[in-house]
Image (cartoon, rainbow, N blue to C red; front, side, top):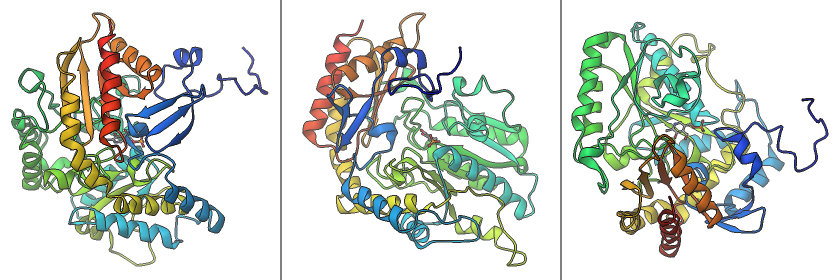
Length: 442
Ligand SMILES: Cc1ncc(COP(=O)(O)O)c(C=O)c1O
């Protein structure tokens, strides 16, 4: 069919939508045309409570004045500055602000434009770091089953979500995976961190024995796995991973693209669990999702390993045209100020017990086989319809949208992660609507 080059305003055909059932959507579109605070506004004039902070990213809520103003002002003042061999003040200010908020030991910040790019950057830095220190054989990367590290080749290689991998060929060589930590038989309906599963970190010793520690550059995990359907780390699990990595000289990377910036009630999951990685990847909440931006945080040891040789030479042959973009930097600074001024991480921590009780009150509703939570994050796992996996949760998603609630589903799991500005009455509204949706499901 010939392309219509002059589509009318209602032509939906050109945009090939990401991670979307395109044909279903275009038959029955769901459009947001506005947003404020905790609510979206739809094209048919309804308000929809944001139960997912957009895509786990609008932690401060929507259309926050400080962030909007900062972007407007920056766009008029300095729209773009070359990212290579030139600088502008706000990128440096933001890097310092992120470092000051980050756990002790995270000293340097490399800017990217997304979570996926942060992951690629961290994996490349890990391999290059070992090489810069004379351990060039350390090239293997270890991820985890069910891990989500974005959609680029490095990320899907260390990632462990089958549908994100199976269509895309052989991926990166030299990658291995830890087992996932989902043990529903022992841990179903756990509040917070599950008791069982720390031993799964010992699998790293098996991988080390198989390949030799001297060939392994890094282990990357989400401290709390979000996109696969919210899996909490079992008690003691992250500590063990840290211990084994340290013992064998392997870098530990925490992918904090979801957990960064207050989701668990602490600035980062590393703070929450008291386990320090060697690198952290962030994005999403860094700019409240308003302007694309990500970053990799590293220790001084990693950064300093590159700072050698003649000073006029580039130390790391890596970077993006938009690394530290002025408007993104301005959005990031205003976002961090909003978090601080409004005490949003503290609000998340304060409301976490109320959130937990409200979420677990869904236990016993039809088809609910597990509920998991931590901070302002939650998951409700539904029994799949026999022979039609994902359909039950997708139906819940569609019905929730009609009922004025945005949820997210992955497989047959409903994931919830509202903006951190949520209050008790909005938590009641969210679970009131969700409970009605679940009760009506076939
Ligand atoms: C843990 C994690 N890493 C990486 C990414 C990829 O981020 P982006 O979609 O910005 O590329 C995501 C996105 O959800 C994520 O959850």
